[in-house]
Image 1 (cartoon, helix red, strand yellow):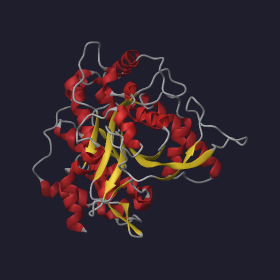
Image 2 (cartoon, one colour; image 1 turned 90 degrees about the vertical axis):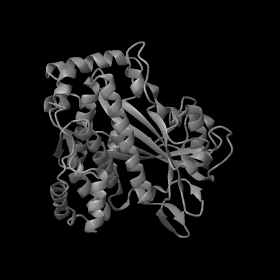
Image 3 (cartoon, helix red, strand yellow; image 1 turned 45 degrees about the horizontal axis):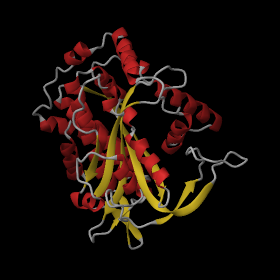
Image 4 (cartoon, one colour; image 1 turned 135 degrees about the horizontal axis):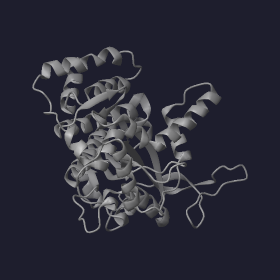
Length: 402
C-alpha cells in the first residue's frame, strides 16, 4: 500500500523542521531498535536516494546514511551541511502549535493555521504485505537484512515511477515528469499499537520523502503534489513497489500468492497474519462505520485520513525487546518460527519460460481495459506481475502492448 502526506516546513522554524526529520527517522521504529544487546547493525536503513547531481546540490550522495540534523536543513530547503538555501521558498500554510508541538485549535475544534514562508516536501510511505513483515519478524539476521534491503530497493522503484513518469515539476503553465529526484528513505519495522492491544506488531514500511525534483534545464524544485494523486498514480506507485519486492522475495526462494490487488508469501499462516494485523482491523472497523453512516464507500484519501485520526502516539514505555518476545510467542502458537521460515524457502526463482509468464500477465490487460485511467491500467498489470515477472519484464510487456 502507498500513502501520501505533505510536509510543510517554515523557513524560520528549526524546531518544526527537526521534529519532521525525527518523525521520519524515528530510531525506535528502525531495525536497529530490535537488535539484541551487543549485536552490531548492518547496512544503513535510512538512506538518500535519487540522482547524484540533485543530491549533490543538497550536500549528500546516493546510499549515504541520512542524519537528522542535515535532513532537517534539507526539509527547510537548505544544504545539509552549510545551511545555504537550495530550494526556492514559497508561501505555505502550517498549523499553529504550542511549545510541545501540539496543534492549537479554535472553539470549534479546527486547527488554527497561518501562512508563512517555507518549503514543501512529500512523504510517500510504502507498506509491505503483512506476510512479509511476519517472515521478517521470525527470520535470522542475515535473511532479515536481505528483506530490509529489498524494501529499500522497492521504494526506489516506486519513487522513480512517481516522479519520472508523473507530472510533478512545473514547466511554463503546465506540469511535466521530472528528470531525476532527490529523496530520503527510512525503513520502519513496527506498526503503531492498536488501542485494544498491549504492543505494536511488526509492519515493514518505508517513509520516502521527496525533497526535490529536477528538470532538463537544471531547474530544481519541490515536487508538485497534484501529479501524484491524479489518474490512479498512487495505485500504480504501490503496485510497482510490490512487484519489485515480490521479485526480490522470489529470488530469496519464497513463493508468491496474489490476493486481489495485493500479494502474500505462500506458507505464512493466515491466522498469524490476522493476529499481527491489529491496526488494520482497527482502521477497517472505523472505515466500515463511516461508510455505513455515509451510505457510500470511502475514497483512498478518506481511508488514509481515518488511519491518521485513529492512530495512537508511539509508545515509549514498552521496550522493543518485550515486543519482539511477544511476536515470537504469537508465531509459536501457529508453529511458525525460524525453522518454518527456512522450510517455505523452497522455490527455485523465476522459471525460464518467459513466454508463458508474459502470457499470464497479459491476461491482466482484459481487466486493465476496464479501468478509467492510465495509472489504474498500469497498476493492474504490475499487480498481476508480482511474483511472476521481473519488474523490467512487466515494463517491457506494457511497452509492447501499448
